[in-house]
Length: 63
Image 1: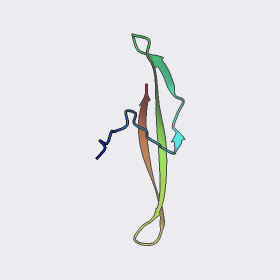
Image 2: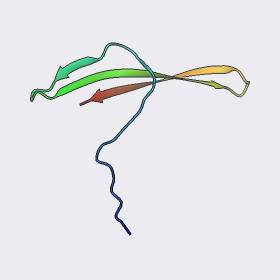
Image 3: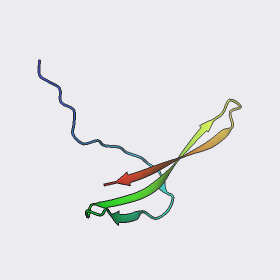
């Protein structure tokens, strides 16, 4: 049986709205980094059949 190999790069998809402008910077060694936050909204019906909205904030650091 062939050996299974895991991918070397992780991939994540987050759909939402930027909460403020991204912050671009470089580390002391010159590596570029960007920090930003995304708000993800979720609508659902509660036990009384009323629409409710929940927000999840996701902080992101991209290298």
